[in-house]
Each structure stands twice: as C-alpha cells, then as structure tokens.
Length: 203
Ligand SMILES: N[C@@H](CCC(=O)N[C@@H](CS)C(=O)NCC(=O)O)C(=O)O
Image 1 (spheres, rainbow, N blue to C red):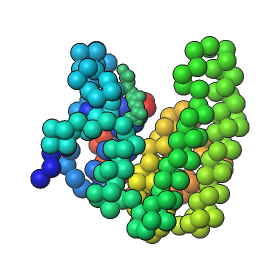
Image 2: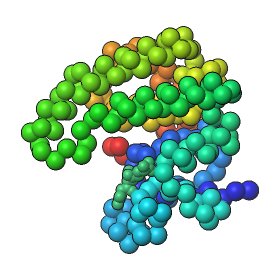
Image 3: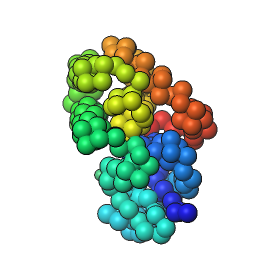
Image 4: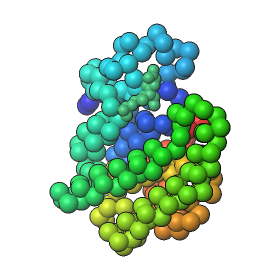
C-alpha cells in the first residue's frame, strides 16, 4: 500500500483539498502539521521551500494544485469524461479567481481596509453570483458541481466556502443554491466525520 505523508502548517489553507481527497476516497494519510517555530529549520528540506508537500512513498511532491489533480486522477474524483474534467478544472479556476481578489498581501493598512470593504460588498458577492450562475446553467443546480458524482471541484468548493466564511460568515447569503450545495456536501458521511474531527483553525 502506498504511504502518504502530508506536510503543512496547522491550518486548512492550501492543504485542505488534499486532505479532503484522502477523506472522500477513504485513503489513509499522515497529517503532519508543522508549527511556525519549527518551519525555518524544515523549509530547506521541502521542494521550492514551501508547503503543502505530499510524500508518496518517500518522494516529495510540491504544488497543491498539481498534487490534488494527481490524487483526484487516481481516486476517480476528476470527472467521468474529458468534458467533465474540463468543467472540474473550470470551476476550480473560477473559485481561485474569486479567492485571489481578497487583498491578503496588501501591506498598506488603509488601502487594505478599502479593498476588503470592496471585496465584501462587491467583488466577493459578484464573483459568487457568477459562480452560482455557472453552476445553474451548466449542471442545473444538481447535487454536485459537475456531473452526477463527487469530484475534486466539490472538495475545492468545501475548502473555498470555509475560507470565505472565515472572512465573513454571511458572505454566501446572496447565493442560495451554493448554500444548499455546501450543506449537502458536508452531509456526505466521510466528509462530515472529517469536519467534526479535524483540528480547528481560523484558516
Ligand atoms: N503554489 C504553491 C504555493 C505554496 C505556498 O505559498 N505555501 C505557503 C503556505 S500557504 C508557504 O509554504 N509559506 C511558507 C514559506 O514560503 O516560507 C502551492 O499551491 O502549493
């Protein structure tokens, strides 16, 4: 059996989709959480000096998107046809685009406050409404974002929703179909159990 060790900080961040893939597929993995104090001594041992890093039988893989695609392909979570695979990628990119609009790395506090306000009042809700429209038009607001089975697009959505709700709890109020999707996905037994037992963190 392949041995997986996932290295990341103690947070959901860029590692949570990878964890959710293991959880959804029922595959065991070691969830190694590195503290900020330990990180400087470990950084040079990680490819690109960053995390998440997934060790697959001792081989270290970097880049969260590439890792999640690699695992999703192995565990049947990439979509059933080439077209579904396209939509999985398209939904994932759409979510990434919305997330990137939040001014995390803005250093000027005044500008940051202004951009945050703009994100919460306009860019964020507008992006979510566009995402919901795509979901309605493409998949008729069905049980999953793509096709008729769980894919990594849904797992990315869970992580994306956690991220946005941590910034502003009611940010999804303007998109009822996405709220319903979020609720349904979190009722899937393996996912529900993971959400209940995973270590708590702000992000
Ligand atoms: N594109 C990379 C970005 C990885 C990244 O930015 N990792 C951050 C944590 S989210 C990190 O390792 N920061 C510590 C550092 O760069 O020293 C990915 O998606 O894996």
